Length: 297
Image 1 (cartoon, rainbow, N blue to C red):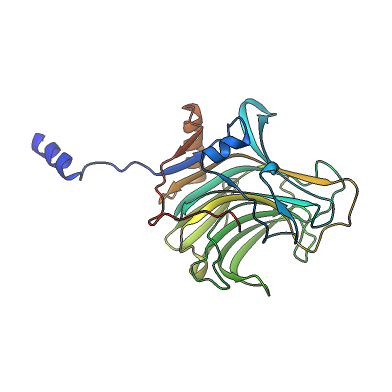
Image 2: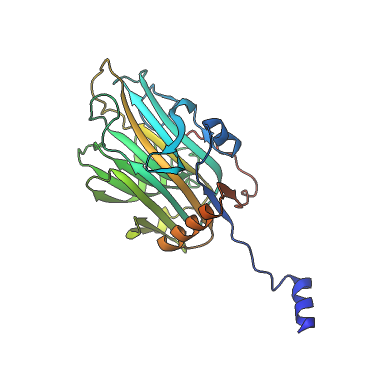
């Protein structure tokens, strides 16, 4: 027995690999702490959203959870007066190093603005993406959750999209993807989850398996984890004196590299980390070679 233990130690054959995880509880004091922990607020203009709109770190704040004084939330805001110059959108990106495994986040979607009239085609998201180097880039990969409380893209229906992308051309628009739609209001808190393994992307909403994508839409290159809040172009309400402001809150985000976890297992792991007082853990290794997350798509 002692010889077996010695051989295990020498060869490393009996060592159990530690799980590679990313978890963020967003318990920071202020937005500056987000940057210190590896998050990048977008500042570069461009796709997606309204032409002429700005992207700003000012669209993010950290606040106490009104339903749980011991908890903190990330709040994302986007606002518009109906013009491109009067529109501010928000995007937050983590490192580009995520591919297969389990992704999850707890998010509060909102159906109505907190200021101004309702009706703008706002899009509230959680997604993972690579940069698009050129039209129909074969290395492009993207997996999206997109909530459209006021409709958009030619339909007025309130719906949640779960989308897996293979590639895309922006102008003129031509996309190769698979999508699933859940119709009806999702105002309030929800858990969104993606299992990425063995050529399939399985989507879960509040623990319920709602779709499976795969084939040519299966991701092929490391992605960054992102949240953004933006407006579908071409559908803004007319200009108003009062700015219309929308919000989306994020409680936590989680990734287990190369592990397929069930919704119950994700819940248990998040509860364990929180009970241990872990505000953030990042043991997911960088891509080789390391990749820059530009936070501009």
